Image 1 (spheres, rainbow, N blue to C red):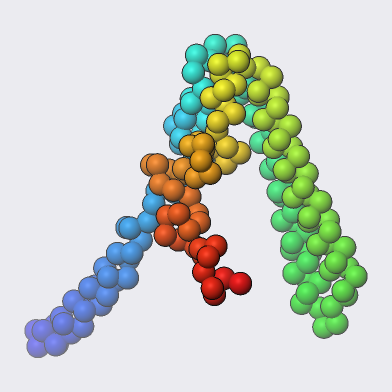
Image 2 (image 1 turned 180 degrees about the vertical axis):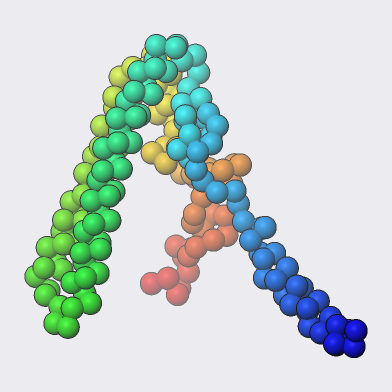
Length: 177
């Protein structure tokens, strides 16, 4: 019994430390991922477009599925190239030409993803009416609405990155040069 009373404060202190260390995790924003229609993430995602017909929704979903498959393949290829680059870097005598070539290949693949994303947006836009295009065009490439004066609004109406929301460097800051 004496041993139990001697180690009880240690156990209590240990549990309190675990609780305090995990507390900051509760303050984080919800994760981005599959979410409901009209919300950012990789959810159904076209719920923000008004008056979509069932045929339009079906066509958009087919385009989206095809797009995700293409982009996932490109991302997997980028992962392979990045793993190859890590191997090249860790060699006893790194081959600068091979590393540069791999960097160029990764850059090309990332450019291909950007081109694919823009082509996908054009394909979706071609399916929409003029009123639907106006709403679709107002939505940015990351799935966020643009309020018209340069501020990108993210989740729950928060301002995006940059000095307007108090984060990031101000353009008139003397230390930013």
